[in-house]
Length: 169
Image (cartoon, rainbow, N blue to C red):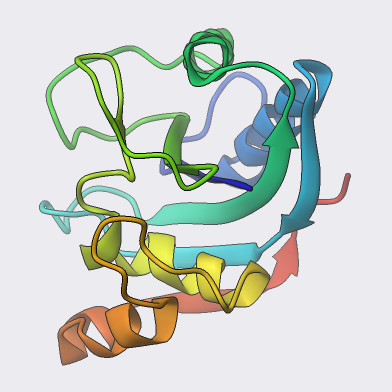
């Protein structure tokens, strides 16, 4: 199974942060990503600069009939279509699609590192995974999602909010 994480902390010409994520999900479906499960929306402060707008994130669990290169290509097209402009690292963005896990493979290429190198330290990745795939285990660390969440700092565990809504597909 494939885990994706989609985030947004800026509105776009298409709408709100929530709408950006919904559009990204629809475009992923159009690109042949078959969604098995989708998490609720989660809200977190912007990192490392808390003065930026808060992020909204979701996790997706699904299957893809093509390889990871094609999934990267499609994800970048979707980000661009929504108006993402690549700027400095950690700058606010309209849409960010990360491949967290691609069928348990360990990929270390210039274009992609999977599992995502910082996935095990990010509350906005781990909490959605716990919701949609509670038995998930990190392919390199061999630790399950509960262990990884418990390993987060207290601050990281309390600064995330599960919102009572999700993407409608």
